[in-house]
Length: 210
Length: 210
DNA sequence: AGACGATACGGAACAACGTTCCGGTTAGCA
DNA sequence: TGCTAACCGGAACGTTGTTCCGTATCGTCT
Image 1: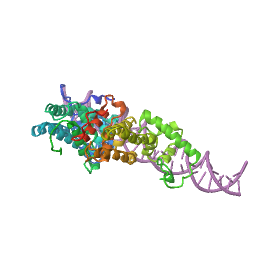
Image 2: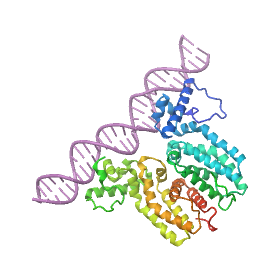
Image 3: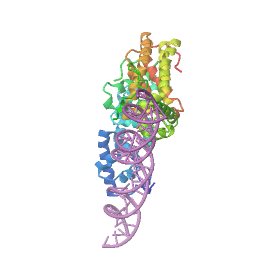
Image 4: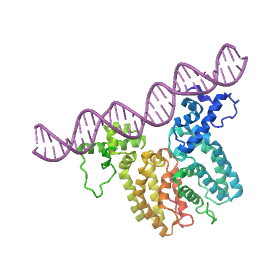
């Protein structure tokens, strides 16, 4: 690989080190790529051809690979704000709802996030090396908040204590159908069923998760 | 498409019509392809390159497409016996276990079937046109048996009555991790969790699904 | 056994796509 | 302004799914 791989291609990777000088044209191209990719992903999915993205951004293929050596890096960068918003939703849900209810609503929120990004569910499930770093990015970002919600509900005696948060995050993502293929609410129902599994032999609430 | 598409390329499609004469060389090549594909799928997954299969079978690419116009047709043919065995397992499970237990064991059986076919879970989830007919083949083959198990358990008052068998089949398949990536029993645990969701507010058994 | 026509073949050709790399350009600093 | 490191675009390359055409094989009839 070229020395460009030492660049700051990871989303938000500004920890510790002095910020590396980024040239104005490079910054412009990165921004153009993110804008173009967001549009292309929305219409054609996260697995859209590279050429579609570069053409829309008005940059070369080499430029895309320099800034985002793997597709997963581009995906992570494009969706970073929404990932953060989803993670941040946990605390407000926790403040407004009982523990198990907050957990349920957050899992449904997470499922909706995955479902509304065209092709994302399939990408996470695909085993394709191009997407290798995406699952770990999501784990790293969502596990702290999910663990908190889960622990709180367990301590409140509202759900079982033998479920691993990593298992739960992955399972919820995997249950997700792309929104355009889910006209009958499959995802919502199956996530709710999984959540009821958490409550099995626990929980006295009669209110359904919506 | 060529007129070869009118051929008997669908697995087991011998209903009603007089059997079309198949030449000896064509039968030989079909058998070689099925044997080769089974081996290639086992080592490289159901998404292995066509050339890998044709090279092992000693036939041309055109021959493969003539006999199996879509990859899903080849996959269905290769796994047909195991699909049948999985479907047929339902009645013996029903004979040996209580209704909800039989349902649980069958769903775990189904999950193991999917998990042990390298790449099958990802293929079913991918949305790729090459695999288009595979989900419906599985639905057509598994829905009758799953519906029977589900109805029986509902009537026995052991599980909830508001879950659609098609939803359940799809969700179980989607929860499945490939066996080589599942060293910690994720699939089994998550399927069990989903099954506990079926039992939520029903079922008085204290015995865990194994 | 030979002829004939229908069935079936192999693999070259083609398009699509991910990815690399090299000659040329641009930006930032002294 | 000059210099050099950073950065660029897109041609080239390899991989892969798929088609199609000239040729071969099979099965039936005489």
